Length: 451
Ligand code: F0G
Image (cartoon, rainbow, N blue to C red; front, top):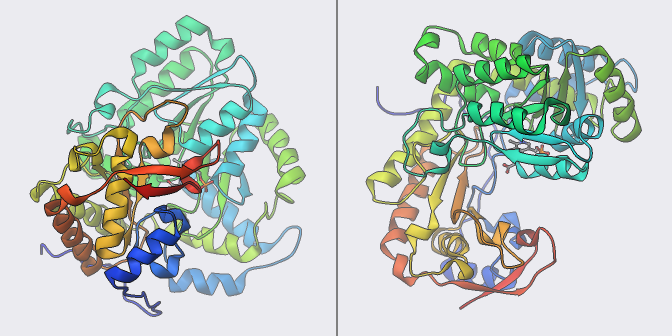
């Protein structure tokens, strides 16, 4: 059968509101042409992020009722801990309120001035936490990972010879850890191969350096490995996930992605001493180690979410649905980063509307056009997000991130139709200029106007 169906049926529904184009014109004006400032109620289909926006299952909601809210030693913690140990093989499991809290603890312990931390691509918060510690965050993704047209099956891979050269150049004493992000969010959730992870491990072994995963989307990455790496064709995804974690000395996870929850994070460690230190920092700012800034019910929801995300029918549907959106856009001539990643499609805005120069934010022109045309909220990842002080982004992109288990196939068809229509009207898209903006992270709150 070719039709992609959701491997679940719907028990609770949440209405979404249709708006008229005239209404959306007003909403855009009020929001200063910044979709972060549009109330979510005024959005029909929200593709701003796949983080914390997923739908929980009936078993997760049942778990919420079972949540043990004891301050210390809650049964929900032990349930969560044993599930995470089973999937990842790490002895030490610390809950945190979200991914960046795990990152903050890790870099406070391992970062510091003069240090260099390589990654395929640091996600913004990882980079920010690394740099906040005084360390330098370095991106070593392979060349193909920077080329929107390369069909390389593992565009998230790290350039391992670059990594080895880095060790030679700066010395192992300045590299406290090597990180790898699976899947690689920058570039749209491109996977990393097991072969590449093994090669990174080998370099880390040679220089006696710990290897950490940023494993927010580990299940999607494991599923890509099953499909694209012949050695793993007949392996269960859960076994691939276990093997992936077995290569690392630790991991940070935002459970808001493949944990299938709305809030939560994990810090996973093997080293006893590091664990004791991390636990102390956790108590300082997150909470006692058996709740880590979360409610007992959140731990139950995570325990169940981490199990469900490895169901192969779910993962088949998840990757098929994202790939379908990508394929339909490519067939319609829309420029996107290829091949489609796991959680998002990235439209190449500089090719979508080449008449809008980078200083007028072509990505934002597409984002505004898409909201105005169809009520869909996407996000600019280009010079509005990364520019300022005369800087420009490397690429002008628009990310369509797909929340997990939230939208049906017909919602995706609506998104396809809207983007194809907008592509026909692309000559009408207008550039924007900034009216007011804060000095940092300006894309969240800047106000703009159409040129
Ligand atoms: N690492 C990666 C690869 C991420 O994609 C994110 C979040 C984080 C770490 C931080 O996790 O938000 O729980 O603190 N990514 C979201 C996104 C925000 O929209 O891509 P967090």
